[in-house]
Length: 139
Picture 1: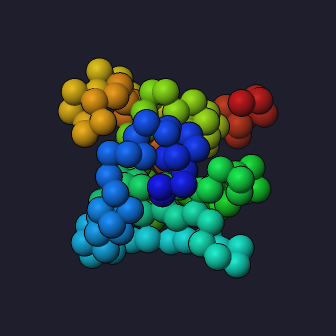
Picture 2 (picture 1 turned 120 degrees about the vertical axis):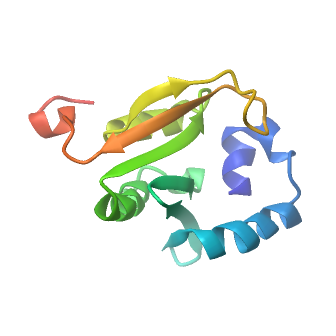
């Protein structure tokens, strides 16, 4: 999580200490979300989801482009017919990934409601909605 922030959104990494990050995973994610990891052989990414929301989703930047994100994303897609997630508007790599995998931006904010104060975007994916990749169109 921290390494992804440090590389993709470096100004955000300083908001919490490594100990605070660990406490968030231990006290919030483990008890409240289903978590799956990708290993090679060490942990290189994870996804945490609950109640139709993707809470956290990270793949180390140097591991991206290998299909790990697609594989992890397939897990909540198999369990929920409607998924939502937030990402930052400036995180173009994440936005491209989600849009490529059928998520649609449904709300843009000015960031006042998140702890970073940065504009974000709410994405939604619904089973069975039209997906241009399934119709032979490039994404």
